[in-house]
Amino acid sequence: MRLTRREVIGGAVALSAVAGFGLAPLPAWAQTVDLAKLLEAGPLGEEALGSPDAPVTIVEYASLTCGHCAAFHMQTFPALKEKYIDTGKVRFIMREFPLDPLAAAAFMLSRCAGDGKYFGMVDLFFEKQADWTRTDDPVAALMNLSKQAGFTQESFEACLTNQELLDGVNAVKDRGAQFGVDSTPTFFVNGEVVRGAKTIGEFDAILEPLLR
Image (tube, rainbow, N blue to C red; front, top):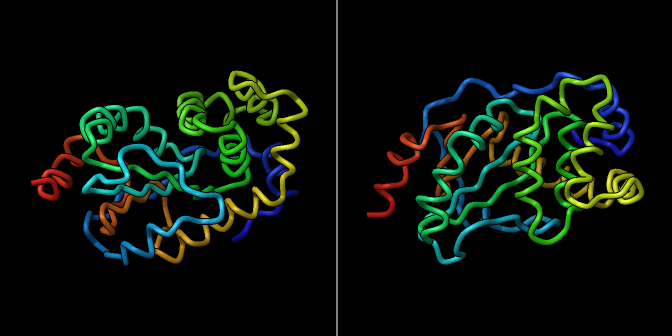
């Protein structure tokens, strides 16, 4: 279902406890998609880390209100980045799959933060997830966090009322659904689907054979 601007703003006000939407992990390697089609960038362009020439590409579809996604990014991603992304072995692409209007709002703010700040905002929203998803005033909580990235009240409101940006986030989510994404986090490793938050050990088992 596509989110509207009214739903993003109104839903963000109403939602207060929306973390933990990820479903139980399914077995890895349960599905394959066309890698060339998967890697076609959407209307917002890609937010990626690592070398474009890396032999392995991981695409993650995530929701910023998903508790499993937050656990992955806090517990597994730092080791994944250090061991594989920073060493040129893996290119990591993150794509928006908001499960609710509040997640869509946070993704929009991450996109609005400016060049080089997307992943910093994502990390901040995951780290502080309980602070802005479990409150009676999530918009104020998002504003307080966004100030750390240099947002003003005016730029914050302009971002959340940007229909073109919201359409882009919706397009990324819709395209993910076409690849079979129906829960978060969902990863594609060189086109092979891996569902659910994984430990670094589980990613080692997936990645090492591809890097030999």
